[in-house]
Amino acid sequence: MDKKECQIIDLGLSDYREALLAQKSIVEDRKADKREDALIITEHRPVFTVGRSGSLKNLLADSSSLKASGIDILRVDRGGDITFHGPGQLVAYPIIKLRDEERDIHKFLRRLENIAISFLGEFEIEVRRREGMTGVWVGESKVVSIGIGLSRWVTYHGLSINICPDMRHFSMIVPCGIEGCKTVSMQEILGQEIDMSYCKNLFAELFLKEFSYKVSCDGTNKTNHKGEIANERSRFARAG
Image (cartoon, rainbow, N blue to C red; front, top):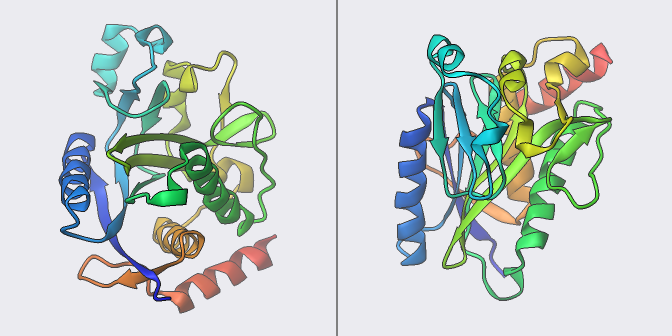
């Protein structure tokens, strides 16, 4: 049987609101079968977002600190509580029309975790899941956050991986609404700089593999860099 198609869309550094509008436009077309599934990959300008079950009590910064930082606060229609997005964080939004046996949200979340775990494993970072929680941890610190939305069984929103963002912003919130939750970046763990372009290509490759896609190529497709990925894997292997 032929593999499904998926379009890879790299928005570069994007405003959160604009990226959300792009997601919702694609979701509407996907619900109407006017297009194939898609994966949006981006970094966001600094923003705090609060999910459907979130509380502003988990925002620790006062109004003057927020004004000084220039960071917006947005309520959004994803699962989960409050989180931070900013440059240096890989954000991935899978827009997938779930069918038949795929219509299991818990299974879908576990598959997103699988991709993140495989991604971090390429850097030889040991990670774990935590029972009853969504996301991926390194020891007691969270490195991957996940929160999705669903509209007539089409997924949107997604996950974020802390590659090398300014981690000081996480001190302004209770991350994911979890008391005592620590956060960490890959750069902090590895003690070296990490190329974001490589990370995007690697994540897309692992995503396509997990969901058994072939690539629908267009001008924004950034996934066909097998040599670059192989070279970067070798670099990290040597550094380790």
